[in-house]
Length: 107
Image 1 (cartoon, rainbow, N blue to C red):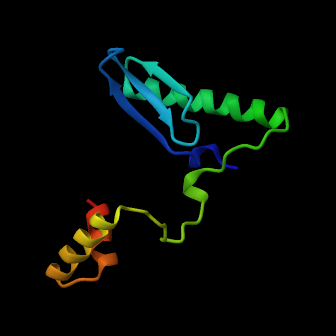
Image 2 (image 1 turned 180 degrees about the horizontal axis):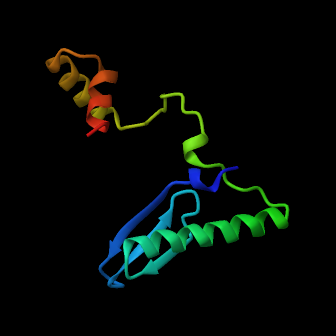
C-alpha cells in the first residue's frame, strides 16, 4: 500500500488561526501548522505512524480512495415530490433524468 495515494487536503482553520492538514481516509486525524507545507507534512507523518501502528496490531488499514474502483452508479432515495420535480425539469431540458441529475451533481 502506497501512503502517497491517500487523499490529503490542507485548509485554513479560522477557529485555530492555522492551516489544518486532513486525510479523507482517516477523518479523525488532523495536523495544525502555520504554513500549508507544514500542515501537509504533519498530517502525512501522523498517517504514516497510525498505519504502522495498525499494521503492527493486525488491524485492517483503510485502502486509499485513489486506488479503489468506482462503478459510476449509486442510488439516492428522495421524496416522491422531489422525484417528480426533477423528472419535469429533465423533460423540460430535453435530457434523461439521469443526465439531468448527473449534470447537477457535477457542479
